[in-house]
Image 1 (cartoon, one colour):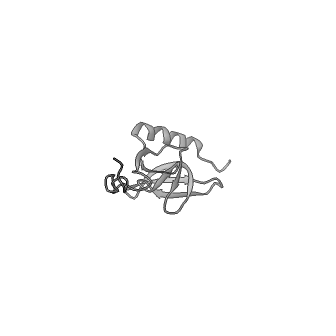
Image 2: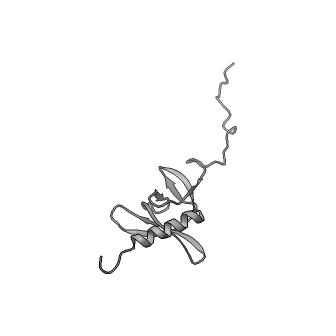
Image 3: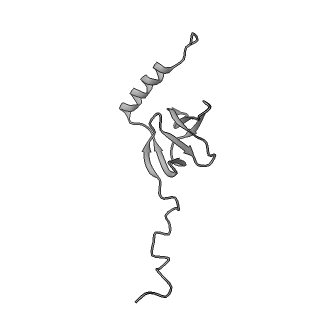
Length: 107
């Protein structure tokens, strides 16, 4: 027999956010994310530890770079993610790539 009023509205997980729960994602260079509060969208160019916390640098399509604290508050393809620092082996490779890509005074 069908219920006259439909399904129970309290049966689901009412505490879950509408966009879904944040999924831990490693902050890899080149990954394009959006900072949720400001709407800044860009590719990850660097991850560093500054002042006792991790900071991720995002470069937008115009080449402007901004830094944000690593952690929750980012969107990847419209879904919330929790950015985590890269692993130790990845950090060494990232540092080597950043040193190789650094610009010098001669160009």
